[in-house]
Each structure stands twice: as structure tokens, then as C-alpha cells.
Image 1 (tube, helix red, strand yellow):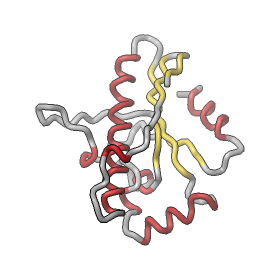
Image 2 (tube, rainbow, N blue to C red; image 1 turned 120 degrees about the vertical axis):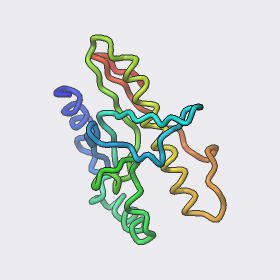
Image 3 (cartoon, one colour; image 1 turned 180 degrees about the horizontal axis):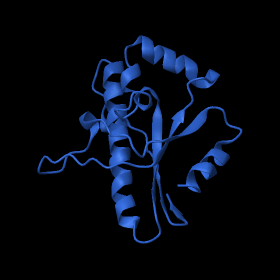
Image 4 (cartoon, rainbow, N blue to C red; image 1 turned 60 degrees about the vertical axis):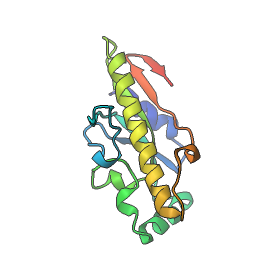
Length: 151
């Protein structure tokens, strides 16, 4: 964590539109969690995500319009009072190099699936017809296990 977070912030330096958010202690909204075939909701977390910074010219108008539409509380897939108000994308699961790869490979897709479901639900509210899964754009995330980064 002491390496990944500063590295991500450095990678975003110079771009005012994006910011990195720590979500390692935040709960995913149960309404958007994937459900297994035996109706079990899997609640796993990632460590970092990216968001569009609300105080930039590129994103502030979007945040304002979504707020006026009553959607400000449902932008992100978390239950956190602040992060659920951010347009989140991607995810990064960080584990130590001593065998955390499988755990990271479980946490990341759950986070990404919850994010896609949240986007699909927002899309349903924004149009007259259902927003289908086929209309969703691909999403990407990373696992960091020890010193190895994987897309």
C-alpha cells in the first residue's frame, strides 16, 4: 500500500480530471453485488479505484446535472457517504507477494461487476427503455501482488 498509492498519484499528476480513491474499508452497496447460483451475495473489496474529480470543468457539469436529477447518492457502488457520490471506474486489488494472487483475482471482478451493475441501473433511470448489459462499455482493473501488476 505504501508503494501503490503514491505511484498511482504520481501517474495521475498533471491530469486534473482523474483522482485515485482509497476504498479498502468501504462496503459495496448490496443492491449491486453479484449473486451466486445459490443466492449468496459475495461482499469483497478492492483497495483503490479511480473517479472523475468533481471540481474540474470537464466533470462538474455532469455532477451538477446528475444531482439535479436526484442521482447524486447513487453514482458510486459503495455505501460510503462520500464515495457513493463519485463517478467511479476501474479498481485495483493489492495483495502481498506471499500468495495473495487468488484472493486479488476474486476481489477485483466482484468490484467491477458491482460497478457495471450500478452503471446499468443509472442507465435505466436515464432513458425510457431498459439499459441492457450489451450497452455497457468494457471496464478494466488491476491486481497488484507483491511487485507484479496485472491488467
